[in-house]
Image (cartoon, rainbow, N blue to C red; front, side, top):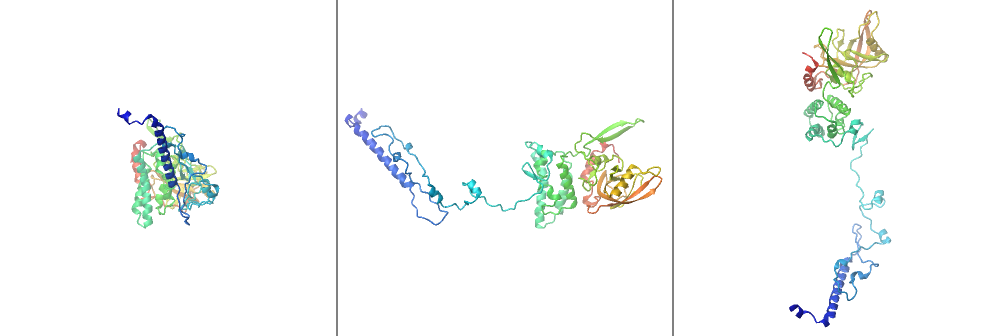
Length: 461
C-alpha cells in the first residue's frame, strides 16, 4: 500500500519524534521573541504632562517556563498556543507616586478622592435658583402641598390629545415671552391667553392626573402669569383669572358644573303649587366657610349663577338675605340687589340700607353693620343682576364679587324702624370693577354655561 511504502522504518520512529519536538520548541522560541519585541516600547522622555507612556514588560516574578513547552521532553501530545497567558506589569508604589497627574482632575479634589477614576465635574454656567418655602413633589417644585398631588396615581396615563390640548396654553405663554423679549406687540397673544383661561374652567375632560401631567401648577406654569416672573407684563384681568384657576385646581376642584355641591328638590306648598328649593350638599368636600373678615381666596370679578353658589364658595353666607355676619363680630359681606331699599350705587362709593326694625330697635343684620363700622372691618360686596338695568355696575346674570368696601359712617333714616343707611367706600389698591370691556364678568363662556342649566333652575326671561 502507498501509505505503508511512505512510512519511515521502525528504527527511525524515535528520530522522527525528536524532530517534531525540536520544531515545536523553535516555534515557541519565535513566538516568545516576537512577544517581547512587541511588548517593550522605547520612548524618549517628554516634558508634556499630557503624554503618558505605558511600558509593558514581563514581570520578574513571572516564570520563563511560561514560554516553553509545558510538556516534558519527549512527550508526544499536541501543544497549542492557548497555553500562552498575557499579563500586565504592576507598578511599584514609587512609580505610582511619581506618576504624571492627569490634567482632567485635581488630586486635592474631594470628589476625585472618592471617584479617582472619573474627571472633575464642570462648573454649572447657570446660577442656582433659590426658592422660598419650597416643597418637592414628584420631582417638581411647587409652593404648595395639595394632598391629591401626592396621592394621585402616577401610573394613570391621560389621553395624549388631552395633554396636548392642556399644554397649548404653555406654548402660548412661551411664545408670549419670546415676543416680549423682542419688544413685539402682545395684544393678540393676550387675547388668546385670556380666551384659553375662560374656556379651561369648563372643560369636562379634566382629571387630576391630566392637570399634573400638564405642569400648569408648576412654577413655570400659571404662576408665571399672576406673578409676572417671566418678563411679560400681563394685563391685570389675566393675572386675576389665572390665579383663580390655579387656586381652583390646586384645591382639586375640577368639576366644571356651575351647580356642583348644590342639591335641588321639588315640593308642593299648601296650595298644591310645585315649589323648587335648593340647598348645600352636606357631602360636598370643597365648601368654604363664609365667617371671616376680608376676601380670603376670592378674586375680583368672581362670578356665580345663584346666591347659594356664592355661599358654597365662601363669599356670602346667606341664601336670600343681603347681610351676613356674626354677633359681636360684625358684618362680613353684603349683596347689592333690588329689595325696595333706598340704596345708592356709584361704583366706588355706596349708600347701603340696613333692615327695618321695630320699636326703635335695630335688627341683628343692621347691628352687624354697626359693629363692622365700629371695628373698622371691611366688608365683601357682591352685586346682583336683579339691580336696575340703569345701574352700569350690574352683572348681566347671577352675582359678582366686586371687592372690599369700608363702612365710613351711617345715617338714621327712620328712628321708629331703626332704619340706618351706611356710607361705604371701596378700599384703595384693588383692581377696577369688572363691569365692562374685555375684563367684564360674567364672561361669554360663563353666560353660555349659565344658559345650559336654565331649564334645571326653572328660570325664565
